[in-house]
Length: 156
Image (cartoon, rainbow, N blue to C red; front, side, top):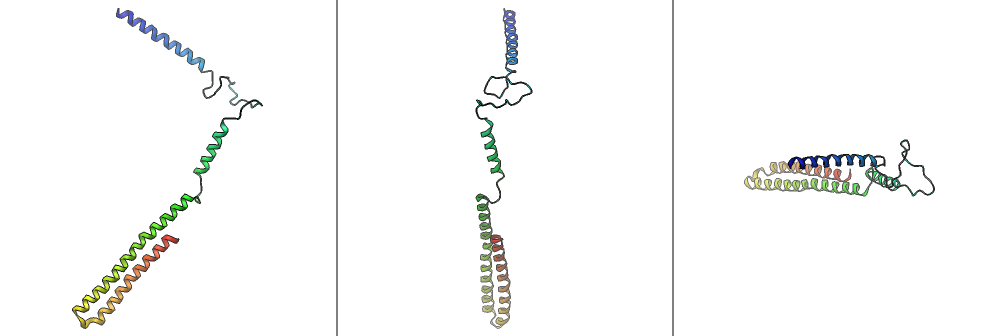
């Protein structure tokens, strides 16, 4: 009994494989990417246009491809690119402007140290004031350099 089932199953599989290959060979003659079942000659890839032929289906695809290529090659002058440059400049200027707060805090610390030193030793007031002015100049120079860098980040 098992041999009869096995033999019938083998016959079914063999016949279905033969049928499939026959059907595939019939469909192989028809071009794969067409909407009609007309067979074109081997040497002729595109049919010659005639008066009754509909407009080519490749024209919308070509237009779409050209539009996307133009969009992909869009120049630097686009609005999005300009907006990103503007945002980057503002972020750079804001980050550099944080240094100005540091310069202001530094000037405050210099004069706080001057007041503290004069309160401890009033006889050195003239010398300490000279050092305080020198410290003020250094801190102010750092603040001006920071302001210069902030302006360069924004406007250059």
